[in-house]
Length: 183
Image (cartoon, rainbow, N blue to C red; front, side, top):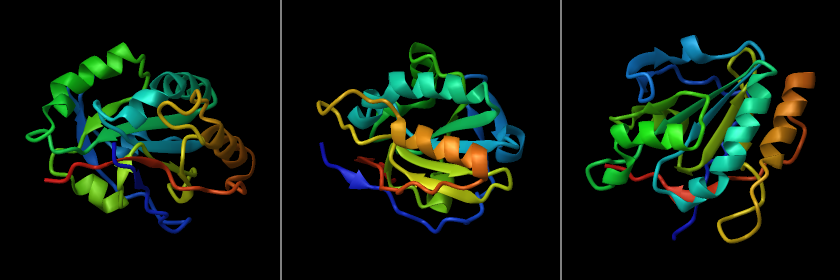
């Protein structure tokens, strides 16, 4: 499994707008509909990546905890489904249900959203403040498949700081995962 690091785009960058298919509800939704006045987490994930499999349980738990505090979570899959059929939208619905996602799992068919965010890997994680300015980009935690149990402590720490002060003062280290499967 080849590992790719996320791009560390500049903090303060404004979240690019989008409108994508929510594979769970089969409706189009926009960033403006899904964002939060507290913080908005945007995750680029996919169905087949072992790095995403590794964090799925902890991600669902962490999302539940922080959604209760007003944080929005949005997952997006941008992989080429022609060459990676396990990432097809109809299977995304099954993955969301099987993993207990309480957040939308969106399909970026033309990969324009991944490109706009400069996403590079799965998982790739971005946290935006109440003004949709980037406050955190980086890893879920220090674990990897077959190397510890995922806790989400890096993301949780960043969210705690953002909720308290509007920014994250913690070190921000790149996420590592499977590269996005470009067309």
